[in-house]
Amino acid sequence: MSILALMVGYTGLHAQESAPFRAPFPSSLSVAHTWNRSLTKKAGQMVGEQLAREGVKEVALPDLTVVTTATTGNILNTYGQSPYLTAETGVEMVKGLQNKNQLKAYLTFDAKEKNAPYVRPWQRVSDEAHAAGIASPAQVKATAAFGATGNNVSDEFKTTALQVAHESITLLKNAGNILPLDTTWAKRITVCGDAQLVADMLPVLKAGLPCKVDAGTPAAADLILVFEDDNIDQARMEKLLLTGKPVALVLLNSRPVALGKANEATAIIEAWHPGQQGMQAITNVLAGTYNPGGKLAVAFPDYTFGHGLSYTDFRFSDLRIEPASIGTDGSVTVRFNVTNTGTRAGAEVVQVYLVDEQSTVPLQSPKLEACKRTNINPGQTKEIKFTIRHRNMVLLNRAGEWTVEPGFFTVRLGNSSDDIRLQGRFEVK
Image (cartoon, rainbow, N blue to C red):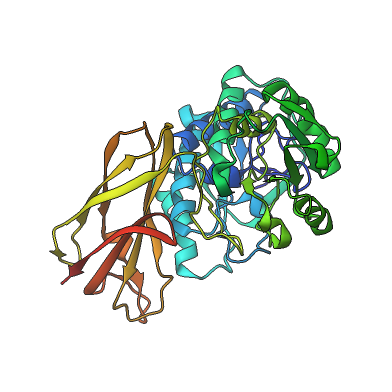
């Protein structure tokens, strides 16, 4: 059996590391940064429909490899470092790809992978999304793409690609709230950075920002906008920072990078490889017509897993965990409120991390075990509800058995792995 693997396809789901805006659809890593199940399924549906129209019947998608280091394969093709988020994203993607039996999605699995937590995504996607089957890497034939220009895709495909690009953009830093751009002081913007990225972005920025945009002298600008890829030019960044002007950095990289001097930029946006709609999405975020809500699916040396800012603020309150104790086959319900305390509508990704306080084997701690992206208007409060089940508490013990061990579990709620707003505990007896 030889299965088509889209290595440079218009889908962008298997992306080239050197072409952030080439693919008609954002990369797999971008999809993961939305933390949006329904959008992921829609993305899979659009990609599947387009592939089916072009005669594709079988694909080796998605890549469920869990990122363990910054050198893990092609990180753009993965869903990041969390087994839970990889499984959740993979389930919805396969459901979308195979919608109405339009094609068959096969999962590639390396039998050398024996680390139990990292095998779970394949198990869940196979069981819950009913993937067509499992293929070894040797069975997958890499080929160049169909429809690589994306000129023949539907309007719905483009709309979905723009939504994914929007929701994946992650605001890492925003000192002094210089973003979104305020034209009362930002009347002239100078664009610098990687030459190809600047050439791609300039026309869209000029058309979409309500101020003068050029590639002129940084010292004459009110704000300097810098575009960089994996290879950040540290000397250039240092020179731009020495101007004393506010510097907004937009990253279009293929893997987590050590920012070095670049971390001193006033604002930092992570856009990964957002595809052809990414230029418009970045412009909209800068202008403030779209409020960023993406969260990191893979940690940086300078920013933790789950991190991502917004142009508004959110407050977590009123945690309730019921019941306080359960049996090893029981479940608990976690409820709490999230309030938008700012002046803009925005999306918050609420994250639930679980700590097994008394496990008999070493575990990743804390583990992401639930998440939800929710849109909240200014002043609005929403109640969020999660259920912690057997599968969230299970571990592989020293006897090689999947089991839930008695003891206390701590539930941590926050908007990143290191920004925990509420926590409580329950007991398994």
